[in-house]
Image (tube, rainbow, N blue to C red; front, side, top):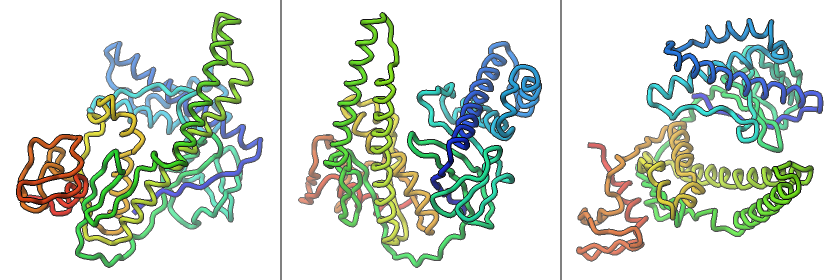
Length: 371
């Protein structure tokens, strides 16, 4: 099984400038490819393969885009491939139409060829950048897949897929149902409840800081418009925006770390199977009263982490059909309570069974059998 390993890079100033050149090239070529495909489609042409587009780039490199030679040709090659896959996914209805990458909004990243990736003790060779120090050792004498270098607003990282043998885990006969929610992130059929981390003092403190910084930068933009009749980015605005990015990064890392800790804890109980709902997160986001709270919970990411960790440990992972009435079904007698409201936090059945709504749903999920 291939697992991704993400390790921090420690480049010097010269190496960092070369890394920025590579990220800029990857973004430029991705946007160029997308624009070329769009133009070709509007003119009635068929889909352009990445081989055709790469040949066009080779010609442009000799004429107009000579600066592309300053970075590895594999950066541009993979950017073309990524844009073509994204464009093709739209027509096969796997994804929405791909967006052009913005310098301000998109996470800077680029591809490094697997054959050119060399590893030494606490060092990694990035093509046309050189040997870069790493914070920890990348496993040596391994077959690497899809190496990507990225910048998260503070540090540079290399993410690489490494083939690992699945461990032999002795599982119990237990079936664990997990019900995701807004009040609490996850309720397990075992009775274990994982709290919503967004309600903790730590996250609230950073959200309050973020709000304050955003107000400050907004006022500075308004003041610059009053003086120059247009928005101008001063040095103070640049400083504030950097602080905002770092706060966003901190909140993201806290939430992501919380998801990993919870999913690891559940998997370490070694159940024979894990059952979850196939949530329509996109549809849930249409509720304007709950959309922000749902987005902060990262349901899709939680399910993704749980799925790959269960697979790695040999645990059966099941997602019940989207319209399975886990919340409305009595976990004792099986009666479906059709008039159950979202505001009803306690499930009360005619048979006399009274239980917390989320715990009742998780027990129903644990008892679910594929027909």
